[in-house]
Length: 257
Length: 257
DNA sequence: AAGTGGTCTAGACCACCAT
DNA sequence: TGGTGGTCTAGACCACTTA
Image (cartoon, rainbow over all chains, first blue to last red; front, side, top):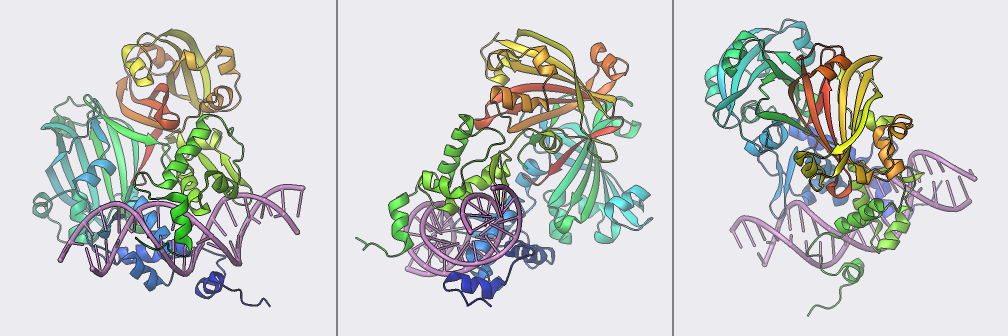
């Protein structure tokens, strides 16, 4: 049996034991994420200071910071020097720089303007149910939006949501929201979209979408299939976008992740 | 006037002075990047240990690690516990997970097989010269590749390189390289592609590419315009890819950067 | 056994913000 | 002025690799 070591390591041993499995800061990150998922801190709100959080989790401030570092990198939290650490909100900037990759061909980022075209309910198809983590045949909301950039129709979005997770979401609520769509999910339903995966291919316009975009039916467009995820990779939303790339493009940065 | 503080802070003051401008670890990162750009450490080689690097730059190991952390996040360096820190190489894995976003529709990642179709030289067009940081009319290499996935032709790549930066790059050298294209740039020319920006739109196949892909001319395909960058965001390569998305898709993860 | 990266702690000071 | 995040240091031990 080893004699107790002197100095910091003794406290280390007391506080953490032998950390064979997951690192402490990962565990702290899990606890923070859990608190966020449970709504302990609301979007836009400040978390307790790093000192207090470190005390609460019984870790050093360095370890606490390492956990927060990762959540900041994932843009779940936002640090502001001198003010505090905040739960990121789905405002125009986050939308523009994180969840909207369509830019003008000259590279300029433009904020889209959404208009609800259809709003309905039906049963989830098999593939949709699987991707949303629902039972086959569960009720879903279906929302079609026409998105304009600088006044011109550029893309059509078809959104699929689990009806059970968005109670009382009516066309009126959706239409009269303030701010972004993910902002609505966040403030009204405490569902926080933090990541998304998109798959792109070429598709041909069907008549309905073609009319909205002012293009002939059968015109080739960029199809984007998105799955939006919340904490713990829980799927929240399916979205299929059809984009007229005549004057706009989809941008993607490689080698940062 | 304050009396000299005791403990670590005194050393802090001596070593770093007042760090008003850029943080020390950013400066260390700059020095590391400079060394990498200068070829001080070759791809696949181990850097000196963190202890030695910290001594060399006269910073604490924590500060050194923070600088290395960022280069690891950017996938310029790779850490291996117990072995060392290495300059990342452009092998199949990095290609597959970082610089090739085409997957089978079922989501499976497949390693592409490249075949040189054309290899020539000409003058850079105005737009190309600008994007490559060249003077108007400088000589460029033009390489057309047909990329197959599981034996089937799926995309055509048109690559543009500054001839001056790739001396003696002949069709034979290009064709008989071992490994990936970026691996060739890295080992033969010490040019290390670390990031890329891609812009996607829909295009219609011209006859030449159509023939290679086994599709009719005018068939709609996914067009990807890539600018590949080295250290300090220096442009290295332009690449235009035309992708048949009948059985493959382009994937993009949002919310990680 | 020696060397490397990985984790954790403790404490100091700086920069910034609100009051 | 007091609180917050941001940077930097110093040192210990753990986990892993290599010889």
